[in-house]
Picture 1 (cartoon, rainbow, N blue to C red):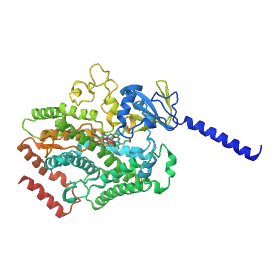
Picture 2 (cartoon, protein in one colour):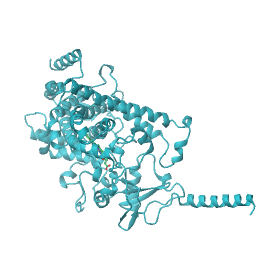
Picture 3 (cartoon, helix red, strand yellow):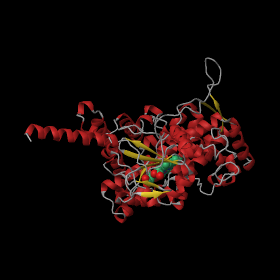
Length: 544
Ligand code: HEM
């Protein structure tokens, strides 16, 4: 054969192989669970909406069942939409179902040091997980009660003084809690006196923006090689990395300085530096990045949920009234509910559980990845498959819940999981919004305790209602369907009117805040003498 003929045959064979390969990309293997029909190359990628995917997943679950699959180009996603499948496949086979899909851009930003993104076989994951268990053990959480109570008094005062800023107040409250217990340092109302937003919030916003604006680098890896002028993410990720590591190392160094000067206050990071760093063999970098587990994981979802709770208090007057009646019956002397009172407030607890069901903060969970090929119900699901828990679909399944789109706390008084009569709820668990298996959220009990206490206090203290439009004099309706597209899922801003229920309660709110001065002092050592004096005067002035 002539050399030109050899070249021609080689090219033809190459083209044929490539087109055969291209035709298999996006195709669903016959052993996978069913799913929507695929098209070559894209698979189902063209059918998946860019935001609010949970609505589409819930629709597909009704069509294809409690376990269905999607093809995204060459990769496979399995979506779990049924409590029994969740238990059998995810929880019971957690050793194989608890990996995390690798995300190129996130790894660049975090340097592979963040618990949420690591495989469970990684040493860093194990060390961070052990540390979180120590921080969030029931006994430790009990020790932190004084600051939790003190922070809740700041929350009530802030809500009374500027209800329109409810989102900031809820964010500050949750962040200050984890900052105090983790690093022994409060977050004061940062918006006062033109203060700057905390670095954590700026870092989280920059992180989400970078991830949302980047092209699909994991699905189309060749995009990684697009030159810088056409790939803004290549600069953006460096900015995020610098912001986050600056915050984490900065906080760690602050605690180191306090330890060196003997100015300690018993916060968790003092134990990390003096004990756990050596015990869990954590490098300096791995130790610093524990912040991501404490601060980011610890405040983002709780803040989104806190905002949902304020929305529900505002939008559902009947449910608010029932919370208030229950609290008033339990505490006829009018004192504020304590954490110990929560057990005696079943309706308030049902209100919180219904809010988690009605608007779960992670409606499609956080994706896992299968680390070994598994067989389940006759399907063969290959290693590397992304596993998504369709939390929204499970908690809005009309087969399981009466009128799932209605906010009705009573359903949790009638059955343990709020399911309707006749539903076999043996496979259900109340922790579905918090993930599954080895990766189940370690902060679940802490979050439930602090949020339920906050709701009890807010309902005790205030009447909530939609704010009145100053021009039309009509209430501005709260749209309970208006949610931000990102994760965790938080309501779009709304306008609540928040009024103390009685003048006595308004006074008690100020009194509680002034009484918290001592509990706060331990966490305000970063203030200089002048700042401390000004704050003491401000607290006293409230009571004058
Ligand atoms: C309303 C509050 C919260 C919700 C809804 C929530 C939800 C979740 C979810 C869905 C996951 C993923 C679990 C999985 O992959 O299966 C998770 C992981 C995690 N959460 Fe939470 N969380 C909350 C509060 C907290 C708090 C207060 C902390 C700590 C103080 C915390 C620390 C973590 C950590 C460290 C992880 C990573 C676990 C891992 O990947 O192994 N979370 N959370």
